[in-house]
Image (cartoon, rainbow, N blue to C red; front, side):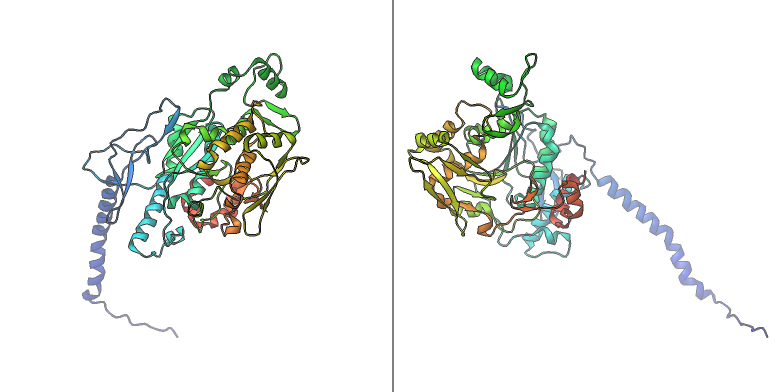
Length: 468
């Protein structure tokens, strides 16, 4: 038997709420459209060649303000210093909200958001929690420079990765000047591109030496012919930076550009005009990658203990020979036949006896911090000049030997190991972390995707240049 259902007759009151909400729908969408248009009109479209400066205010947050100075021009020394941040010329009284859709602006947003949290004295519940605010904050010391070297602007992408991860690991807390030495000149556009990564720290890109043709012209005919034989230059060829050159008692031929960077770092860097206003140099090779936020401040340790050198790995290679012994004796009146690291992370040395051949194990060159006043002092700069000698473009008399010997003669107890003083950075370089621990994923891009992005501060600040 079919079941009948009696329907209740609907009252006009039943429809009143529905009619009210249906009536509001057009007003809701109209209001939403007006809001979108208003926001769109207030957004500022930024182009790659725009100039602007960033400022922080507790009430307004990240803003764009006028910056009256134009981009710095190249000085006669061929050193180009960028402004702290590229600037946008605007009316002096106008403040506009900064659009953050460009990757490097996201970096600045993260930095200023971190500063906001610090000023408020607490950490908010958002992803910036992992930007690792230090308590107390790191102190910014005077006369400190972050330094590296490349041959040309072809290394720009690699430099961006290195400096961005270093910024995420350490420099965003202190914003020390960054000095990049290059042998081949860069365009202003290339300098500005790197300045965006380094900002708000100051960037200087400086020519490290005259062109190869001028260096060859300053050498004697005999010296040039000897160099051409080393580099297997054919009669119809002109020698270039990319000729691979052999060296007696040195098993690994290297191109002339690489040999020059070794020579430059061993001696010439200490006399370069761009270095003279600094006392403390933190060196990082351009092919290194930081992998974590640094929990402690190595510059603080360096300065408060008045160290000569603070290094990431030792020993890394060695140099020995009677010629090394003769150079030491001429500079210091004695020679060293051994350097050892103690369990608590500093050195002791042993002088050579007359019958001994000098033998020096060396600091790994990819990362160290040095007291430039020590290395520029008369006795040590005299040794470095003797060490490099008249044998141009040598790999034997290299930067690792150059940073090791003065530290050993100055004060062995003032040469400190980072790890043995509770500073483990896990810097990726040449297949190892900190020159000690092998890593499995060799390709930097694959490592970043699989492991590196777990470092939240690194991901926030550097994803844009690590995932290309």
